[in-house]
Length: 135
Image (cartoon, rainbow, N blue to C red; front, side, top):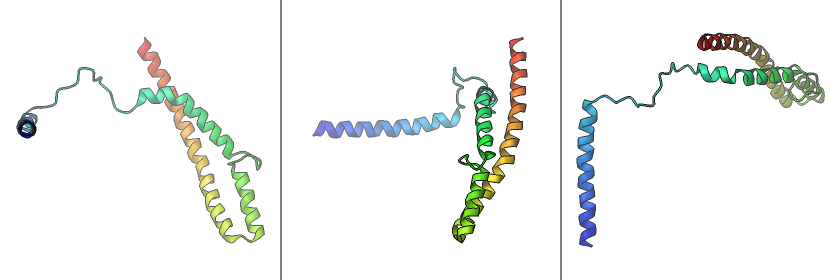
C-alpha cells in the first residue's frame, strides 16, 4: 500500500514539474519545422487537377438527369408533371411542397452549367502546368 502511494505521489510530482517546465520551454521557443513537411501553396491545385475528369463526369451526369424527359427520375420535367398532378387532384400542400422543390431543382441547372465551364478552365490550366513542369 505504501509503495502504491509513493508511486502515485512521484508520478504526480513529475507531471507537475514537466508541465511547468514544458510550458516555460514552449513559451520561449518557436516550433521547429518537421523534416518531412513540403512547401504547399494550400489551394489544393494538385488534387483538383487529379479529380477534374471525375468531377466533369459527375456534372455531366447530373445535368443530363435534370434535363431529361418526364420518364427520367430526378428530372425537372418529371417533377413538373408531379406538380401538375397534385394541382389537378386538389392537394394544395403537396403542390406547394413540390413547387418549392421544383424551383430549387430548376435553379441547380445554371449553377451546374457554370461549374462545368469553370472546370473546363481549370482542366486547361492543369494541362499547361503539366507541360511546364515536364519541360
